[in-house]
Length: 290
Ligand code: PAF
Image 1 (cartoon, rainbow, N blue to C red):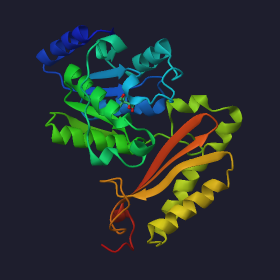
Image 2 (image 1 turned 180 degrees about the horizontal axis):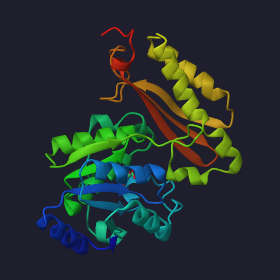
Image 3 (image 1 turned 90 degrees about the vertical axis):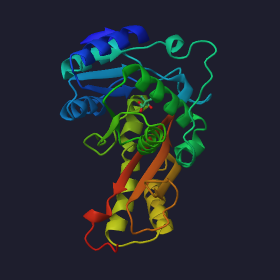
């Protein structure tokens, strides 16, 4: 695996691969990699990428002033080893100065879809994500790019941006990778104390309770949300940011409960903020009215 740090070197390595007719797959990350990230590398390969590029960049623009930018976990040599073993081809490690030289002011705002849920709790977050992803797309010029579904709203924001700005890239969304007890893998899980780690699956349990209710015929978002809140309340150490039933296209409350739905949640446990979601695919529920 080749490691590159500058935009120029990255462009050069990718131009060479493209000149040899290689299909370029891209997995952008914040680093401190886990099995979820590595499964996205596999996904890129499965989708036909012949050059798999991974970027690691802790993007300051997507962290709010009171968020965890400074303490976000970083371990370059461990990440490099994991990627090497997983068969990635090119690792791009840009610096903040290279990505945002003095005087750079452009921000991409994707609009309505970036406002509810995470957008409401983390003002400016999705502008930071959209801007860095667009920049990375312009540098890497991938044929396909893979993102994890754990960040469901991020996936939707990127999909919207790609559609609206005619970005020539195929988007692939990989399933959430979970620990044995259901906790969605996340670099931020490393913040959890031993005690909090035991409590953390409560978020997934609450979402599962919502899913069960819908599968068994509950047809009212408020009822499902209160059930999820009740479930979360069984773990008093947890503070709920939101546990919501939304339309997976708009991230707003569903106008039609009999279409596909997304159960999305964010909670705080000590100093750790966890997010997760479950998608309800109506086609897979036999009794659903359509
Ligand atoms: O999901 C992430 O890791 C980040 O938000 C991304 C897509 C790499 C942009 O910084």
